[in-house]
Length: 228
Ligand code: SF4
Image (tube, rainbow, N blue to C red; front, side, top):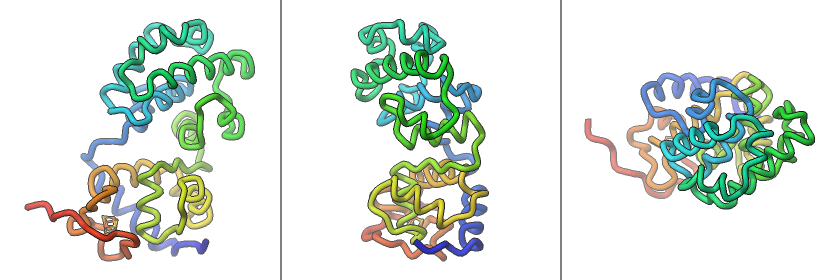
């Protein structure tokens, strides 16, 4: 994978930095802000957030942390109790099992704290690279990680920054294609843009500030322009 011209990346990132002002933040960004950068709360909140609306994730996290606010206390809850506390988040039955198992692992293997490396974090039950990278960025202020979800994966391919099939490949390609200074911001900027403009289906290319330099790779149909 070639390196994208640093000037192109800088123009896109600075443009997005201005353009997303006032737009609603992605769920995982809100969780990070809400949880005051506590790694344990960010980890559990992010686990709960997959395929779940923001308000539902927020309410479920609040109930769960009110019942148990440490890995030891949460591991002591039964799976049934966790299910009841987090319902109706998506896949709440699986997530309840992962929450309990992850808390038990934090307790027994990591002294009741969230490990500070990606390699250790992805050994926790239910924790993939997306969640682990986000915790590294938001909780540990890492500048060495990129959190790639479907929005980042899709937009990076549409803009021609990467040519990949899976988010994991995109993450690795973005480390090579972009300068390190942008890594902690890629998720927030591209996810916000993906939810509002460069949507999965019918992206609003006619309204997009990135349109003049975007090759729109793989885009077949675009959405209607918004009325001004
Ligand atoms: S021009 Fe279209 S494809 Fe390119 S970033 Fe904007 S919305 Fe996405």
